[in-house]
Image (cartoon, rainbow, N blue to C red):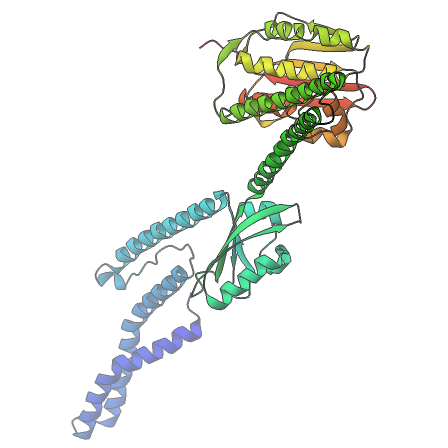
Length: 466
């Protein structure tokens, strides 16, 4: 509602303007002697009163229209005013109502666009950080808030990302207005490697955004690169060691032991051992490479796991007798078939049982259990299953310290390198098992107690007809 003082002032101004032509005519009449002065005053007062009666309703409607437009400008939700007097001017009231409906539709459309953009920005997997001219945070997306915290607005970027390489690139972009790409690492809140793309707007956009930073998490990429480099270095070392031994033995046979048959027999045996070790290593490398290539193709054959286990265990009877060990197969129920590839699952059983005999204490028992389980690991691959077949291999060896367990499936990782080489291990057996189980969309769990032994459990999905 228009304030009374303002309304009165507007009324006076409007009436004076409206009565001005009449005032000029009356004044001319008085000057020409056609009107007496007393008649002039009475006539002008009558004109003023008539003008007030006519102008006041129009002024009320105009004020109502002004207030309505001001409310719309402030995004207030208001009803169109009832312009009782101005309705006669081109149906102004109906036009205002149509304008109001159109304004509401456009405002709703704009709000929908803003919401859609907010959702789009939040669903982008990369981290987005938008800064103002003072390098303070204006806006972030969900990925940024997940890593750096929820309350980032108005914070200087330096307080969020503690890395001089990143900040130096930002300052350079601000100075010369040219976008940059840089890789950097942070240690807090947790170690991450990022690739940052920094772009500067010549003119700040709506909301005061001057700079936008996109961070791509390349932690796994860097880790993979390091793992590949370590793999090449380790594989080269593992092959070079037996090769160097064989070359040394050959040189010895050709030189100092040339005329010593007993020494030649001994060295030939050692050469055979080293050659066999290198052959096992090459075979494991080929197996691992094949499984990695096929990891995205889940096998779909019907496999009788009990049959596979019984067949593979037979291969270790002689090795178990040599260490006075007993292998016991514990099959609790009639088990359904599993979904997989029989040859690869045989490799899993072979590696797990072989490790149990190699690292188990002489004179103890190795238990190979197969059962149907509804208590599944919490890994992502098992969430879609209600039940799975669990294959477990239990030994009574020295056990594995807790800090080593997460790394056991890494290539060439050994808890005790000397002991592993002594028993003929290549350091790739559990890596092969892990990749085969990953390809089969299963899971593997390792439990171990130092001094008591270890249990390696593999969970495999059930075969379903059709």
